[in-house]
Length: 294
Ligand SMILES: [Zn+2]
Image (tube, rainbow, N blue to C red; front, top):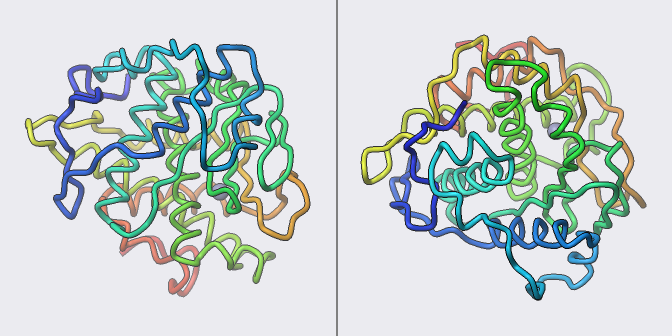
């Protein structure tokens, strides 16, 4: 269990202040997640949703019970509620940090999916497509995470993956994502720094969510131990790998560049987690990718 059982994750929740303290409405991110889940339950191909571009039509039957995701207990019990609550929290956090950046959305799929970066199968693992600015998560990957490692049965691993991919969306906005292509190889490369910054961003969100109270004095996440975090990060990287799909790539393929060592990933995540501050995540101006302390 990772969400606080009584945390309010429903639509009627109080606005959750991030570092900027501003209330944030739930925007397109949740809408797209909701839509893709609906299509999946109807047995359709979520990729078809993407073909209609930004003007998405809601399917006829819309009986995904995300509306019943109201508490942290719901998020701990159901992967759909967990993803919804995590997206809402990520959007709140990042809208407070970067008010001008558009939120992203997450598409859950199984089997295969079409994106503006090309087609992908579950074998690719979670990824972010900069062209349509969406996160893609195959549910097979999540099923593998469930019950694998950690006392929470993989719950926080799933949330970490989503937060890491959201980090790539933030990098698409700040321009940092381009360094993956400009400097793709080597242990101190731009590509590694992009990945480690996304880990640090994930940590900053998680740290913020364990310590920031909403208007009703509620915290969203339970405090995570270092062991919790280590098992979540290792489970996520053992089961699958994300790929940022760059513009010039004709199709979605698993990417081959390094993400940094597990020590570096943990180090940058903890730097974000302990501060709750995304401004501490400047991997690009760090002398070395090992300089995550201090
Ligand atoms: Zn990544």
